[in-house]
Every structure is written in structure tokens, then in C-alpha cells.
Amino acid sequence: MNAKRLVGIAVLGIAAGLTAFANSGKILLMNDEWTLSDTGFSTGADAGQFARNIGSWATGGSTGNFLAYSTNFGLTGSGLSSTMTSAGHSWTVGTATTFNLPTLSSYNAIFLSGNAADNQVLINYVNAGGTVILEGGTGWAGSAAEAAQWNTFLNAFGLGFGSSYNGVEGNIAISNPHTLFQGVNSLYQNNGNDALDINISDPNAKVLASLDGHGLYAVYEQQNRNVPDASNTLALLSGAIVGVLFLRRRYFA
Image 1: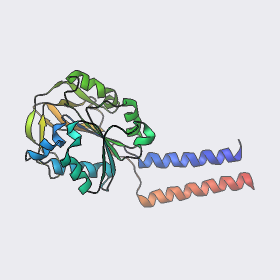
Image 2: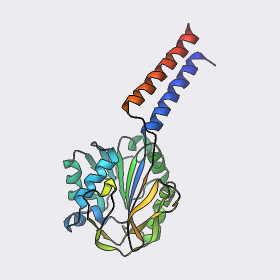
Image 3: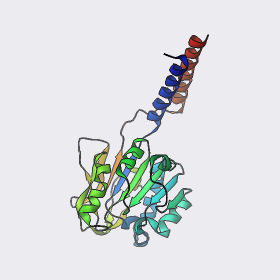
Image 4: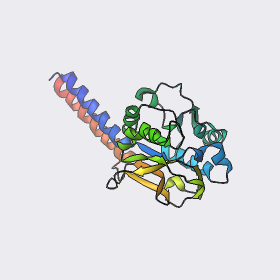
């Protein structure tokens, strides 16, 4: 094998390995779009705290670059926008952005509600480490069509939308220790699609909050990933560089 090609393969392998350690895609599935709407912010529920928690969860506690790829009121309101920007996040709203992996990869999280999007692009985005927040219950094209619009994407990660609207309405009490619900006592919803865990044997997908058998909020997030801390990552990278230099010296000496 050509020595330059061998070294190139080694470098690519190192990069791929480090990327695999670093990336951990996530999905937050919300049964309804009213939760983060201006109405959701005005009902006395904890939409603001929930939105801040989503931002922190999506970025691992730092500030991020977020795209709300939607024209639906569930994501276009002033309450959500001001909450995200006040928390230090960049918040872009609209569907003018080219919806492909290279473009989406510049965003830490993609928020979706109503407007259709390429399910395979979303699968690739999450597999590449991106976070998707998806709202149901918009009423666009009816409950079954709305569920079908997203279930190719969701089913790839053990989640799904129910094909009927659930009739759940009002400020619903939330009691779950997950970081998404810290400081959140209730959230508003109005007749959404059930958030489903379609593979209960998969620990990465789970329903976090429900009411009378209706899943309200579900997540996909990889459990017990062996992600090295900074010192271990540095040691791994240093060792890899030494290996590449050895290959170069052996084949170019």
C-alpha cells in the first residue's frame, strides 16, 4: 500500500474514532406544540424554565446555535425567542435554510413543528451528534398524517407518534427528575399526538411524562456512553499522533 495513503487512512481512522466518542445525538419528542407557544408561556405553566432546560440539555450546559425550522406558532412566538436569546443562544426561525446535513451540522439543535422535513436527513443529523426537538399535535393534515410524517425518523430511534389526538388539555403536572424538568412543575398542552416508546427494551428511548396512559414527553439519548474526559481524550490523541509519526518515519525514511 502507498505510504501516503496508509498515513491518510490512519489519520481518518483517528478522527472517526474521536468523533464517535464525542457525538451523542438526542431527541426530545413533545406531544403538542402549544407548550412552547406564547399561550404556553402565558398560562402560568413553566414554559420558560422548560425552554431554558432544553437549551442546556441540547448543548451539554453551554450556549448553542439553534434553528426552529417551522412556521408554526408553537415555535415562532416571542416568549420562546426571548427566552432562548436571553440564555445566550442563537435563535433562528423559518424554513429558508437548506435542509441537508452539511447545513444542519452548523446548529446544535433543530426544532420542528408542523412543517415537513426530510426524515433521512434527520436520522443522519442525530447519528452525527445533533439534537432534534419535535412537537406534534399541530393539526396539519390530521392526526394520522402528522404521525406518519415523522415516524420514519422517530422509529429509527425507538420512538413514535400516536396516530390519534389524545384530548389532553390544560396545565398538566410534571414530576420527573430528568434535567429537562428541573424547576418545571407543570406544562400546557392542547390535544397532541401521544409520544411513544415503541421499543421498551431499548434504554436509550423512554417516555418521561404521561397522563392517563398518554405519553406527553419522550426522549432518545444514549445511556452509559464511554465518553472520555478531556485528559483521556488528550492522551488518546497524543498516542494517535505518535503512531502516525511512526508510520511516516518507517515508510518515508
